[in-house]
Image (cartoon, rainbow, N blue to C red; front, side):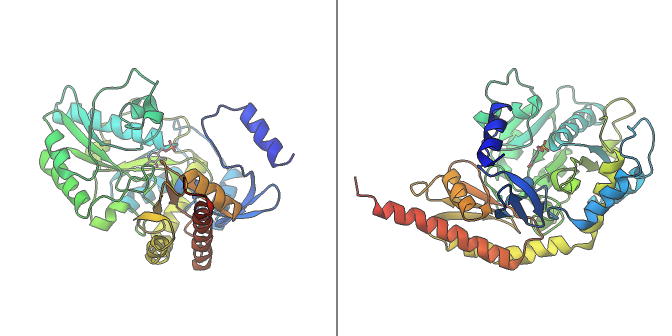
Length: 406
Ligand SMILES: *Cc1c(COP(=O)(O)O)cnc(C)c1O
């Protein structure tokens, strides 16, 4: 089959819940992927930050291969010999007493919501708990999570919606302070909003959120599914402000780009509210997931990828700002949201032009494109990519100038 056939069969036999770029990937290594025709592309999406440690990371693959030959699934009805090391290692990385493992990010967010509500009922004695969430949030796709989304695409048509959430403006500590009442049990927040366009909140904001939660006696829950595990140049995006949330929500890169692995991490006075039979997952914490997750924790403990993201990201945002047609650049580490002049091209058009030039990236809303390459990317790869983006944007400008003025 050729590219056209692969795409036609995919589109005719699967729901159209995605609108992929017309590239069919056949293999990958490090920061690069190869399509079915043998063309190479620099992967600047990295599975929405699931591939922080690169495609086919040898250390992660070795752990997975070794585990495939031993035992892959037991269920949590029994103990298995990979579980303890993963739980202890991840808890320690997070500086928390314990973890609760799930599979996808949305499941971990659901777990955090359930834990916060139960903690509210049992520890705070709240009868109708509410959780404060942010405008333009992205926390996943379940019916409860889309109930507090402000993105019409994510939410519309999926009612009736789960109550118990209060939506406030992202970046305003005052808005949180005003929304807290006697029934509030938690604030759920992305330290940087990825899907919204890599929105970095004002300096000091996360520290203020921490302070509000502490003084109100409610839980600060940081969804670090996309921002965490090295992407921003620190293990967690909260680290940039020296903030420690009560609960971390992790996923994506925790699975090393091999299997879905997610978890929440918190202290015993919080996670201890969940007792046998009250929450679970058939696949959560399975031996393969734990072997892969332990390899990821070992990599993060060495700090090399946090350092790479910090060092390689240092000049990146400046260079992107200098490109033609770029209106704004946001981000931290190897993560950038780039607003293109909307009269020049849509984000989708820029991504298509980048694809033709050997770079895979993804647009978010309107004319914003997001860059999040695997952290194994080299300085040369990045310089080449910035060049390709500059070339694509210059071509759009030349095209516009060639058009007669209406
Ligand atoms: C991707 C993402 C999720 C959902 O993860 P899934 O594995 O797709 O369910 C939740 N929160 C954030 C911040 C994310 O980026």
